[in-house]
Length: 340
Image 1: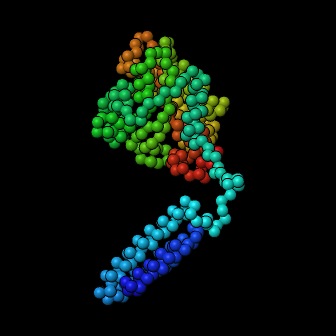
Image 2: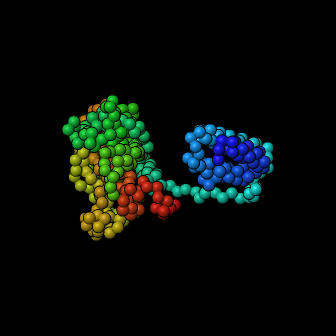
Image 3: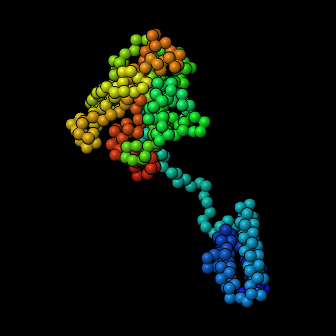
């Protein structure tokens, strides 16, 4: 088509738009002229067959065609939305019909573990304390008695910012913040998101959740810590769960212990999940190091306390039999519907 023929087609198309009385009719006009098999694509393909003298005017006419038709279509639809013309030929919407509601969602297993843990420790008098995800190096490491050479301070292990702040690697900084602002006695748990430079695999994630606990008063002993964690284990995992404590080392506690629960799969007999030991590591804990108390202004000669920390994802995997931590983050409804 030459320029004159395209201009004639433009006039016809604009007339068709004006005559369209429904949304469906407007859409039919658009498809007729601008659709993949419509008139305009055919015209554009035919430009190469024109002579050089005809090609320029025809190309400009084709662009005008497209712009004018798009503008007319938009105005026509806007008029219909304002009620200037009749509704679509489709069945009109009946506001009296019952709605088709989407199913109500369920709580994510990570949120469920956090909520249940908060409830369990609330029975022991613990309250929830929270803090920012972006922390200072002092609160995250130094105030917790972490030495300069500790590997967790390395850039390969921690997300550092140029100003010296970091994405917290644990929720322990919340304990520091709370002790700085609150005199003893103190009993808090600190659920929250943490970040480490871990390669994602079946048991590791760069983003994860922790729940840490802190109890500070006078005459607190390791027996108090063992009693609290044993109570938590049986409330969370059931009355038959076994609990054991193993000596360990953490910079911010002395003495330090690892807390294990009997494997939920084999009930302590040994299986692939627990690697034949019958036990699954759940929490690190211990008596608060006196130097940590000194950093926050507590007198270690007067007060004592215990602290513990556990991974929320680890507890969820143990309790629900989840074999891969990535399943908790993929948002696959086929997996999440199990917890509805």
